[in-house]
Image (cartoon, rainbow, N blue to C red):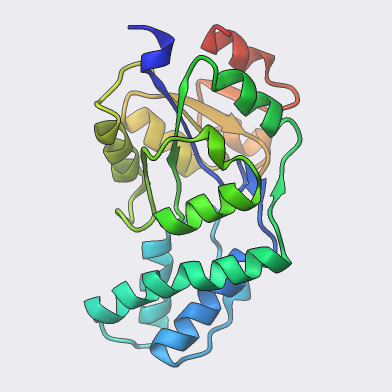
Length: 221
């Protein structure tokens, strides 16, 4: 099987880019509009989380009963607020990401495994000017609340390729890769530093995309 028939799957936030002031406030605005309850989003930890689970957490904390129709409406409105906020607070793409993506896209297919819902994931990539590198294949935060199952779904959508890589910045990403037979690549761009990620025994660890020669070697490019 050639490298081109395999996939590199990427997490977004903390791995490829940082979107300060955009996603968190969009989540709060959508929740207030749909459920009529203002919430303090500053205390919510999104690192390694999925949008479905964050919504469920907020509903439980606010004693909001399960309501599939309103939950669907929330995820329909979230991209609106995300788009509005991205215009004010565009995401910051981490150093070296653009060069990395341009290099690997010539040899590998690129997909996503992200806690963002599909629409918001591609909005972040678009506003970071890196969306053109990625296929429509992935596992997203409106597919499942569990990152292991999200990664499995991404592989299924890609035709269950072998030898694929999963890049992420949290222990959850490493666990998802391991559970699905993917090569785990820990990227020290997010809240977890090298020491914290090394404990999880990823296959490869890189401090940044500016210093990723071990990864390029593993990808044979």
